[in-house]
Length: 300
Image 1 (cartoon, rainbow, N blue to C red):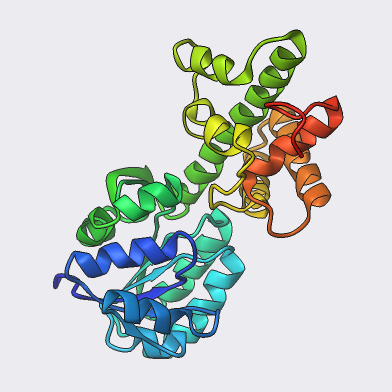
Image 2: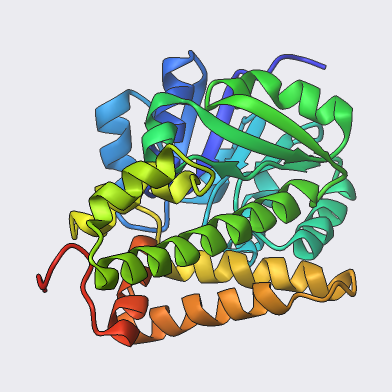
């Protein structure tokens, strides 16, 4: 197969923007499109990429299409819009944290048109998207992942081959389930400790030197909760979506998920309480409200 040179990139939001920028830096010819008017033009002006007014325009002449949008429904819409422009042999890389079953349906449809697809959601957040150090979870045919590898390596430092199409997305949802559970239990521990008389910042230091350490204690509690910034760059609504996908995979595999269900319910309750646009780190406010305690003091 010919090497990938021309990439159409659909979805340049918080994560997509730095990921597409790294593809430009790696020497690929990148054409971007986005549902938000003017965003593609702004990206092109900043990075030297090309901007397209529509997904079909972006996909014309592309060897590879990268899609990273909020939901599988939007992936399906983008792919449908691009389909008339996709030549046989084009590779679609779905980097959305989507629904494995829906992704398999899209892949089957594309295969009927001679277009291959892999799924490859990412983990690491905006900071690691900027530095090109994301962890990538790939699902699909080995040969197609091999073909995509130069593209993926421009955006991430570790590529984990998880299985057939949809496996990467299942892994991403389950990763976020573990992350979400660790975040909530950590916040509860900080609240208990503060009400006992412990300094929550010192608690974080102890956790990070002990067996209670996790990604949230290392990278979120001081930075986004105790600072009261709540601006990590990943939406609370998106975390609820990922937890719902994890539970969907649980149902499909007839796996009992009592703790996962409670975890998802708490995150969904926080989303309802805080409203649209809240950062996922703001879920701490739900636990604070239930305890009548604000971590770090009595600040609003």
